[in-house]
Length: 431
Image (cartoon, rainbow, N blue to C red; front, top):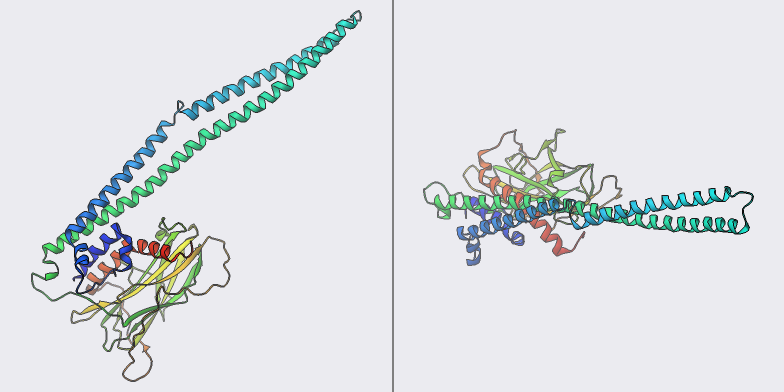
């Protein structure tokens, strides 16, 4: 199967059924897929995926509009707003009553002071009773005002909380809409690409030209060492990637693939924009950004039994929340005779993201999700794998990158988040 067709299938799977990516590699597929796999790879299935993505986007947009409409409905005539207004009016009336009661106490005391010397005992008793009565009324008015004020505050808070919750609901709905739109665009692009491949002759290779089918090569291995299992936001960590050619032939051009994916603790919010990868050759102190297809510049050539070490640096922005991360690695190759292939699976090294300022102490290195497969091949001399005699190529993309870069890079960019979340939930770790 041609890689560009595999890409379309992987993208559709990422959009519609994330769990499928646990068993489908992004750049390679079985040469003899089952009938079910063939059905998933058909244009008809991709059309269903695109229709489902469109429906999901329409639903998300409708939910967002409904959330906005609800916020707009919370005007001065909403139930909670009317309740708050009534409570404020009651508080104002209670305040006025207390003021009047306090004045009544003052007036009663003035009346006592104003009694003439000729006042009878009955007059004096009546004046004193008036003071006592006024003071009791003032105490009651004060208690009523306190209660009315508390109700007014409670009603105002409920009204404000409702508006805040409505505003937050809009924000969450907008996130869902944004993701749904991205999924819809990805599904549309996958469908368009599949139709394009179908028009060009599909996997039958109509139209002549050399066979551009790439094959899995388990003896091309990629192993990460030194990546901490916990990375604190706001810090940089250095680690190493070793690419080993365990085959019995020289690989003319090898393209190391590195991709860092992260989410918050819920697994639903993507943090990829807050994690950054850079690379450098073992002999250089200059750091370069991993390209937008998640490839490092090619190793050319990589001899049989040899390996190349590449320095990597992972930076997590200080504003990143606590969450989960994974660094995926793989390797692709392209030979001058047109043959190509690469690692059959992505190797994932999981790590935790600790909030900025955290002190996790000494932590072990991140471990691969599955043990790297040994090459099972020794150099003809019988010695262990020797360092590569070639070097990382000068800046500039090779025409050989084309289909492999497009397939594994783009498919992973769309589907890695789903792979990570589904796998982590199945494992039940770091919940």
